[in-house]
Image 1 (tube, rainbow, N blue to C red):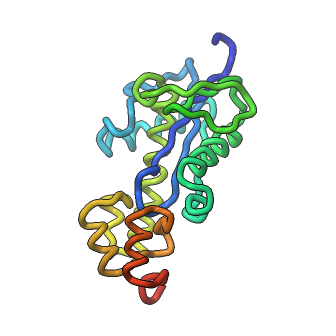
Image 2: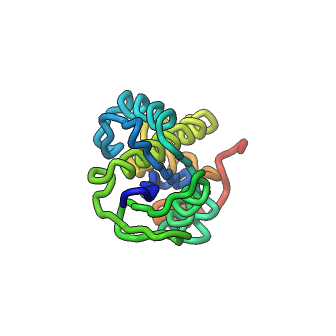
Length: 200
């Protein structure tokens, strides 16, 4: 694809019970390569943080976009993920001529693209996007932790760990919990309330 700008796209946060789903899009600069790119899940937090800085400094273009908890609950998580990915691509400047997306589905795009299963390990542009998405979402979850420290968002980032489920049982859902996800929905049904933790 010589001469065509290629963007990689990936997301973070499809599986958690709380917080947004975040997508990133990256067009790398072949003149300024970033060494050590890999699937964000295979990197240490320290390595991810260093690579995030390098990607932001050296990429031809990058963007991070999100879909909110409200959008997740209204659309469903798959459609909200596709929306976040579309937003990330649309925010690139310059726009790419071709897009490679991690997974087996393409979002709605104004240009051609392909879905690549395991792309976060196979395609460096997608690896870069996975790192930006993961780092951006983790920061959002740390902000939620400061608002609601009793839930432990700094540790589990909203995923359904035993500690998180126990906190949900004790305190009920926050406004940032996904009501359309079964564990949250079932808990609210048992509690007989959609209220937030006291004082919120």
